[in-house]
Length: 371
Image (tube, rainbow, N blue to C red; front, side):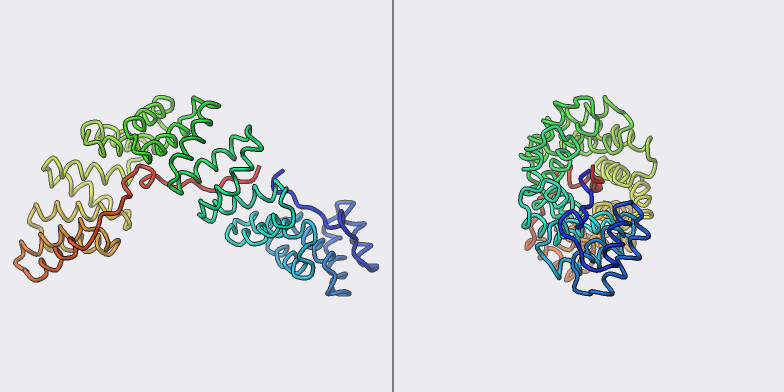
């Protein structure tokens, strides 16, 4: 087990009669009784690091991770180099999904024992869970090299590479996963994201097509394929893929957004508004939906509504020039020349962000549990 707690009684023994009773109960697996005795032991000797470490141990074995953490913290403060205590503290945080909090003690555990594969693995997974993907790569790469058959850890490493936008690393790792499991639709999706990040969009399309072929109901696969077709200006193919995603999830906001964008490109503003209003009713965070909705409403001469939509787009990300440009055009149409001029000036000052790879549009994976 990656997340296995280590008893401090394996290292050094605490002192005193309460500690002796606690050890006996603990060794018999009577953790509730041991907890009572260890609490008595720390009350008798508040400087006994081993007693605190074992109190944490028996609490953790009763799934009382929130209570175990303060006990481990106290033990670590009293005896920072005690074998196992930093690791156990990190595990207790990890078990609660407190990934950011787990990083400190697990980093200390690696410093105490640099050869601990358990500590390095949990540290890498915690960095992943805390969205520190570059750090996750640093810790997981050597673990995966030492355990090449661990498909789950390699997958986390590959996803870390993808989310850190280290697409060459992601392609390498996903290719190894595909070799082990060529029929996995999910792996083809992830490989496609890596290839698109490398600018190899035609190959990425092939991977998404393989994913859909393997499992037509794979979540997000049809959307990802549609997005890549949209990005490549293959609008008919994109539309078909987005519609396939909607068959699986009729409220799929991203698919509805890009169907609205296609309708706008095809000079069908009424159809675009129908799609895009559906999006903004359910989601308030998809900027492009507001931009396109504002453009479509402007085409329909519904200027006040267009103004509201475009202002919402600017509020979501004021650094993107497209909304400012649309807003400038709208102000120009409405006869507000000074406001239009201000928006066009902003357009000249801004640069479009390079975030148009398919990985940036796909939902982020959750942290896997320890093996």
